[in-house]
Amino acid sequence: MLAPIKFDDASNPAHALPPPDGDTRPDERFDELTRLARRHFSVTLALVMRVDGERQELSSCDGLAADRVFVHTPRGLSFCRQAVPGDESHADDLLVIPDTLADNRVHDHPLVVDNPCIRSYAGCPLRNENGETLGVFCLLDTSPRELDDAERECLRDFARLAEAILARDQSAAQLKEDQDALSKREKRMALAIAGSGTGIWDRNIVTNEIHYSAGWKAILGYADWELTNQLNDSYQRVHPDDLAYVQAAIQAHFDRKTPSYDVEHRIQCKDGSYKWISSRGKVVSRDGTGQPLRMIGTTTDITAMRAMSERLQENVDLITSLTNEVPGLVFQYQLLPDGESFFSYASAGIEEIYELTPQQVAANAAVINTIVHPDDLAAYRASLEISAANLTPWHLEYRVELPRQGLRWRQGDAQPRRLEDGGTLWHGFITDVTERKRIESELKEFATIDSLTQLPNRRHFMVQIEAELARIRHAKEGYAAILMCDLDHFKLINDTWGHAVGDRTLRHFASILQAELGAQGIAGRVGGEEFAVMLPNADLIDARAFAERMQRRMVEAPLAECDWRIALTVSIGIAVMNAADATADAPLSRSDAALYRAKERGRNRIECH
Image (cartoon, rainbow, N blue to C red; front, side, top):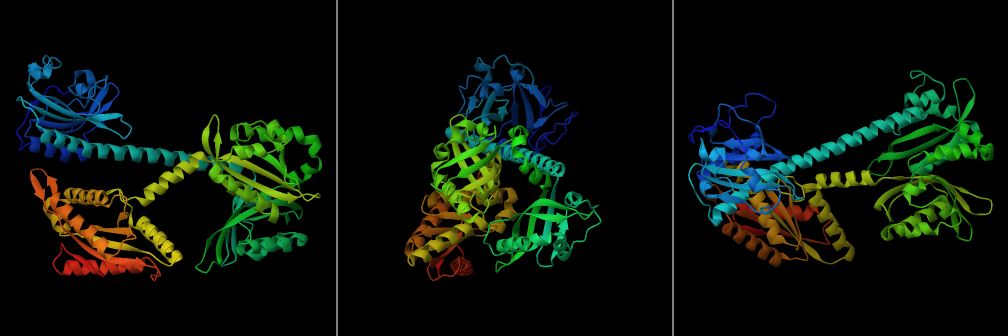
């Protein structure tokens, strides 16, 4: 594992010595753990090793002075391989070797028979939530020794703290990987837009200004500097016969009568000729009264598409070839007046999107209903009915259950058109958005959880309270208890023991709170050392009983720090939320006022509003 080595006294830990060469250095985040472990167990050496394949890497050690430290060491030369063997015989527990000379596995190990003559070893494997081995937390001594049950559990506690650091590393690395992948996809999309002849516009509705991308201006033959950003100038370029239609479509979207702005019209180019364009946009921000503030959209030159539609039959092979190369399903879907439906055209992408062939949906589209997830089927049908009734664009994100791919997310977009016989015809596109939905879900989780305590953060806790209040007000009856909890003398703990112990204090209290709470309600961290609790259907008597149990648990379970037991107390303020409350802030303020009285009257108290 390490050679050549010698051991220093406890007052001069040599883990701070840098490695002589190479870019890999010990991880200082583990240093406090190894230092505390060495002092707590009174051993010669405490260290954290990362394990990677057939090699291991030193992350931190305390008690070692070295002329040279081999940061990367083959696992075959290590005691740690015994703690995480290939046969997984110690997969869920630590390994303790009280006397190395009496153990056949290591009695002839160079570090046992030669300097520094290690006589005892204890190692606890570090694993992630999937059970994969990440490393080992080790204790080594030059004297034989056994660990009792309490010492073994304490070593496991040290290992769990190290595992938390490694878990955060893995989570951060995965998030960075996802962010990089998302950034690459965004760049590819930007390149695709730039090469597709699509322009982007951004309208400030308050100032009547509209900004165009260089690609938008190029569609009309203008250079980047040749157009103003005044909206009135923009309207003058719209064909006179199309202007009223365009303005009416925009106003309908402003008034929320349509989910998006989507029109096809003619527009004048720099040389005086007209082009057909497809302009799509959506209001992305509104003020407090619902008035639109900003709308963003795209414009695509569809002049060639209009001309192509007149000779569709002769070019059908070309169109089919093009659409089959698009990742996703390009389709033409028809709903007959009698309610029957079918795909008059489906690109080859239907095999990936629905695991069907174009022939299977050419006569009847009912088979799609068996693929759409049962929980989304009603929304799927309703969205098509609304689109057909109002001739509004169809847009929906929904799940499908496929024989080969399993559960997947799909996004569909289509433009409807009324047929002469009263039926409806959609032209649209369906794509796979499973990966995007997964990333959105992960980002949502990161945004709602307090990373230190793993409780809901203030924002998410307030959302939960608002939801409960909405339920109470809708029923016009019921109530819920709101408790504000503040750790007493938390600043003194930080000043005396340091912020690391302060953080462990917060985690300790959060674990007690969550264990006592169970499934009764929810808790959240709403400030530095402030926590809030909501107990649905609980009155002041129920809430006080819960608070008293919490205070008893705090007395029974002080924070263990080395050989010390840090006594913790908590002040609690209680209020009741009912249907008369206009917002969740009101009962929260009342419980906060009660908490203030509890602290003012000596702390470690419970006060009710």
